[in-house]
Length: 196
Image (cartoon, rainbow, N blue to C red):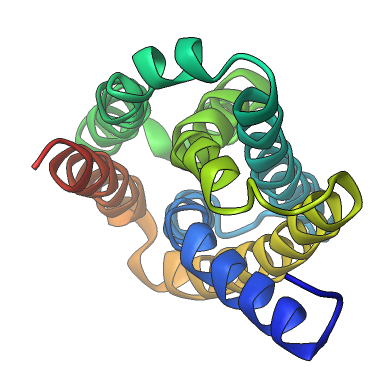
């Protein structure tokens, strides 16, 4: 692959495809916390973007160094994503059904540092395999591709958070239930796609 318009176009499309899970999780976070401020939105979108940039580069490095170890790990990716997203989604669902989302403390936990870290891993872990797709790139091109993926992810997550906030205000008490269901469905989709 050469540095040309096709490279940037393909990287952008790859970013959009990889960012769909992060977009959906951002939507769920926005639904769960309709009063979320712009700074927190940037932190959430930035976290997802950072993971989406880190994972393909990690995969690229694995291809060029420890390929045999990565291939053993690859079959566990759907299981890990399922476990993480069902855990976070289930927690949001239970809080929503109990009515815990009425207090600000529950909202802070939905996209708090620990939950955000888990969401970031769960939504980007499948991007490790992108390292195989970009294995023939040099380091600079692989890094540029990863940064384009991160930029696309950031923009899509900001859109997801904004949409979620808008509808979260309308759905008020049931937003956490809907957000939890979305996360669980995403986990199942990653699992089913990865295993079958």
